[in-house]
Image 1 (cartoon, rainbow, N blue to C red):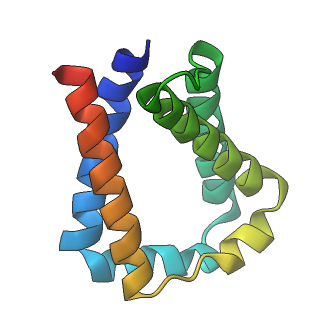
Image 2: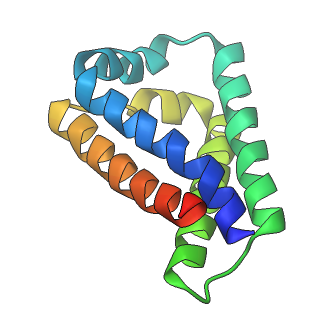
Length: 123
């Protein structure tokens, strides 16, 4: 199951990380715009994050290896983000300010994690 989830989450994280590098200004604007986002879209984003994370955790809750731990943490992060957007949306929307360095750091983390999970899932 670790390899299956890695083969799905890895490419998503890798591509998203590349997007953070290539379109840094866009992602800064997108993150900043969350404070003015339509409440329905915030709730739907929370629902998608929560459900996707729960699917991962319901099928994979392993901390017996580095790969298993990373996959489990990716699922847990999605659940926490989704739950936060559902339970405390005003706080989350207002706290989502990120400068260029934050976007680039997040992009680096996503790209490295995505590359590792893609390697694990496909090779």
